[in-house]
Amino acid sequence: MPKMKTHRGAAKRFKFTKTGKIKRGSAFKSHILTKKTTKRKRGLRKEKYVDNTNAAAIKRMLPYN
Image 1 (cartoon, rainbow, N blue to C red):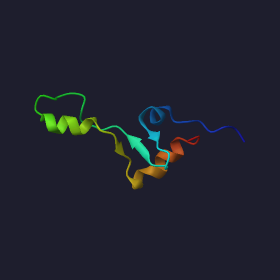
Image 2 (cartoon, helix red, strand yellow; image 1 turned 180 degrees about the vertical axis):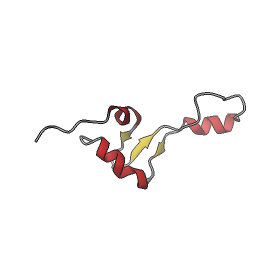
Image 3 (cartoon, rainbow, N blue to C red; image 1 turned 60 degrees about the vertical axis):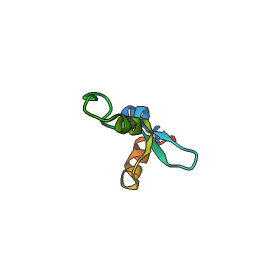
């Protein structure tokens, strides 16, 4: 059986925590920032966790984590 390939796009975007949750970055923070409040932009800096409905698909894309 050959090795499975890691989805490189997913590998760059997601990291696993020690407990098995999947961390992700926030969306909506790259441009058109002038109309967003400072509080909102500060909140977007924080890392979020992937929802359980998407976790299985991401785990399939990252087989060696």
